Image 1 (cartoon, each protein chain N blue to C red):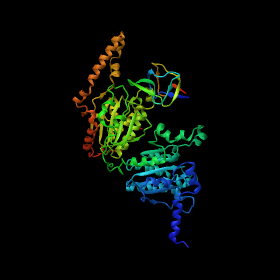
Image 2: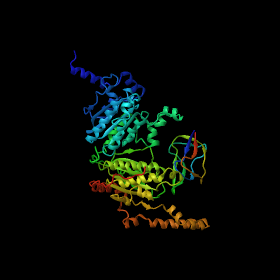
Image 3: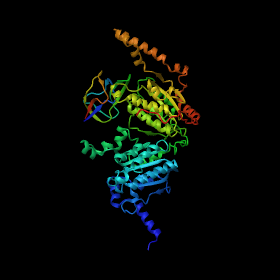
Length: 513
Length: 70
């Protein structure tokens, strides 16, 4: 006869096998997904798992761990808390114990001040159990409530490798980053079936809330992964830039040479302000080799946001991309920058702004979209950030674009310029047109008119010449382009110990949304 | 058939393709003058130009269909 210990071991073994074989087969063969515990095996250091709630619903044979695995473990030696939906158990749906387990692991992460990881793959709430897990104080709503409270205190990271439906879709959305797996991940408030029934819209799952859609159209997704293994590696890479909580500094790694040699940097930045170039070519000449981790790469590409290391130390890079839409700021690019700046500031990651910005887009279309409102958000985030910050005027910085990219008025620790820089309310063409419009119209001879315009543009260029701004201490220094990387290394080293002071006593600001 | 929509508002400064041309990803389709810059717009796909819906000097808004590919 089996001993009590053997009986318990057998029950635990059964639970560790996850859902019924027929469901596991479906997960692997029909959906092509990893099983829940396979994901944890790839993510976490061997032997590091401590599990809570393994026995949840253990009297029900087919409800192993009640459809969610909640563990403490280590990612590359660092403690983390993990919630992983098990799709082989009732499609990862939530019952009362599932919800309680998720809440408890969140509370544990908060108490221990360690990153909270969500591996999301769930059909949503079990409607038959709703009275016990939907409306109450420790029911599903509390998961999102805690996520809001945890935001900015500990990193919250999500991999979306299955569905995340209705209210459940707020779990990924509340996270700092959502890594979306191609073809597997989907999140939406209403499923395609519900949309067809309630509003008559016929649409595929991918169009409604697929990974590619969210990473390139809605901007809800942050990182697009080709497959689950890549997504899990990306999660580890992402965490390498972050401290475990907001009162720690981010980890420092071995310095490396720049991604590309900086000697030819002048060749990649055209002097003609109106000629597009690829800002990545500047980034590759500044950051350590292999250290780039880009956020929202496929969305609002006129601005680039990504983590990198310079001399082994992490920075958040916000760079205008003149190659896309001229680097003009739109509603989405402002949102993208705002979100990224706040993420870096929350976790003590210094900021590096690389400017080549003609300003915010104008026109009736963007005004109707609320470009003022969105622009405010970006400016707000720039003002609010207290981490070390350096802004570099790579080329042009026109109008409110200068402010939004942390120009001198927005308290960078330094605003430095390359000799290709031009800082002005607007470019020479627009300025001359604005000031002399009537006079230009009065000149009948086209040659004379052109001559006048050219002369005035030349005068304007001289007025806003970057040497003049440097002479008047508008900017803190001008930098020889080939010395930009070493200048940044030296400057960040001085700024890195400044306290992230709290500015003025208040509850919180009233940021535009 | 694929409709190529203009990604931002501006005035058409130059049309780089004409009906019958074969285009590939990354190839310039037109140059837009916007925010006092000349901004090239490139094809994202392979295709043959079936129709060019704009002329030099036209104002186009974001989302307007400028070229039809097949």
